[in-house]
Image (tube, rainbow, N blue to C red; front, side):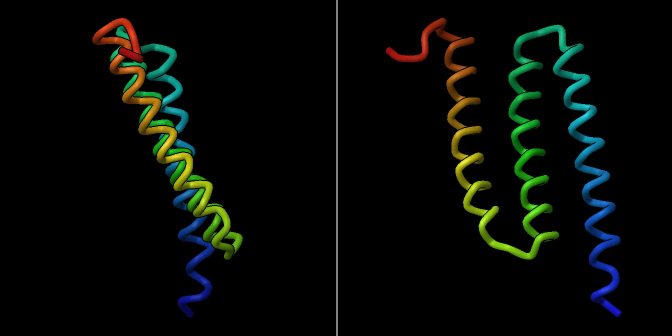
Length: 93
């Protein structure tokens, strides 16, 4: 009985994450400030990570989780670089 609920839960999760991505894209397009856009790109990265994890669960393979770890590191470094550029006008001191 519990095996039949997993596809329903994955479908609901895919729907929720897809809706979150669409709302983030709207905020990216509409955001009046660059700080709004930086936070939106960071949130889009997190949503992409969630989407890849869900796809890995749906495919029942662990190879997607390595890609998730790389995307998380690159996303964090990108957000820090954007913020540093916004504050100081230069990334490398």
